Amino acid sequence: MKKLTEELGKMELGQGGTNTKDGTIRADEFLAELKGKRAIRKFREMRDNDSTIGAVMYATEQVLRDVGYYVEPANDSPEAKEEAEFVKSVLEDMEHTLDDHISEALSHLTFGFSLFEVVYKRRRGPDSRSPKKHSKHNDGRIGVRKLASRAQWTIERFEVDKTTGDVLGVRQEQNYGLNSTFIPSTKLLHYKTTNTNNDPSGRSILRNAFSSYQYLKNLQNIEAIAVERELHGVPIGRIAAEYLSPDATADQQAVRSQMEKILRDLKFNEQGYALLPSDVFRDNDGRPTNQRIVDIELITSNGTRNIEIHPIIQRYQHDIARSVMAEFLMLGGGANGSYALSKSKTDLFLRSMESYINSIFDVLNKQLVEPLWHLNGLNFDNMPKICAGDVAPHDLKEIAAFLRNLNGANIDVSSHPEVVTDLMGIAELNFDSEKYEETLADNKSMQEAMLQREAENDQPEEEPEEEEPKAAQKSDKDLLEEELLKASLEFLKNDKRS
Image (cartoon, rainbow, N blue to C red; front, side, top):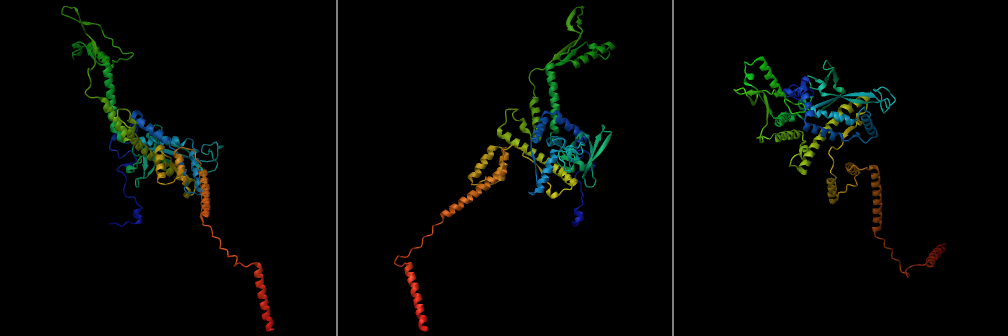
């Protein structure tokens, strides 16, 4: 066995997919109609023509456009907070809003990928007339002018490194396919649903709905034709046998062709009619009969059908919605459906939406914020991160029940300002976190002072020293007499010695 070395460890030996290195859109797809630009046309048809898919994509766009965002500093230093404000100002200083960009970026769900060319600018203030310098800010830094969308059906192919499989850029068709322009990956925001097989074109979320869509499309066409036939009837024409004979004359053949055209185009609408000759057959005696030489009759079906087509169509619609976890949209259309079932299916859908929006912001951080730091020569230790807000709405009743359970367990969250701030944000209430922290500090100081006073009051009082009995106590006069006596004795001792 070959020993792993540093040089060998840095090498990339394999490849992600069989055909992904040639840069073709969906190169590893086994269905020919879902490979290359045919796939883009088919997924576009599915999105724009099918009502179920259109409802799913519209719901996805509206849910994710309502998601807020915030810029999280790299740390608590003043420099990091200042750089976070810079990124926020970049997002607010573009020619379009970030919501518009996210709405367009969500097209990668339909096609598997979406591309945007980043157009930068030098921020020279609002007085600059050049779009390359016009900005709300005048700090001289490089900002973003716009994130220009590059439609999927204009992408000819991806330019891929044959050795590593890394995307070098894309070739975009221009002038109706006569010319192509190369856009390097360093100027691109490249969104894709998955990275399976290292395919730069991703995988459409509608891929699993393709078969159901094809059957549904055919059944809807059959149903429309059946309704038209049922309402209009099947036209039946009658003409003389010699007009249908192979030996018919030219005039007879012309009458037959005109009759066929009338039967084919006959419809009951505002201008629908059929003009027929009034000639009738004659009997052997030459008398006219009631049978016309040329006649038209509409035949309608009687009774009910053996196969109801509507349940089949409804089943395929459910399959399409289920393939993108949006089956909750179909609830209420029939006799079944409950709140619990709707909630569980809605939660799954919102969870998938959360992953989609997080992937969009991951691309913004990697392919937009990092290049900005390189171009401006900024410190990467202070590079912030753009984060998405909550997708799913919070159930305040469930949160209230959770807080009651915490309180019952003697867990007090009111002393944690970050928790209270999050709860107020969930409830969408105005809340001043700094003032709340000051109030907590004041309350804590007051509580400490009260506890200290209570501790002092609870200490036992010192017992006073017992006073000596009056008989044992000596007055000042007695003390003075004792001192005089001592002095006298000392004087007598000294006098004897002398």
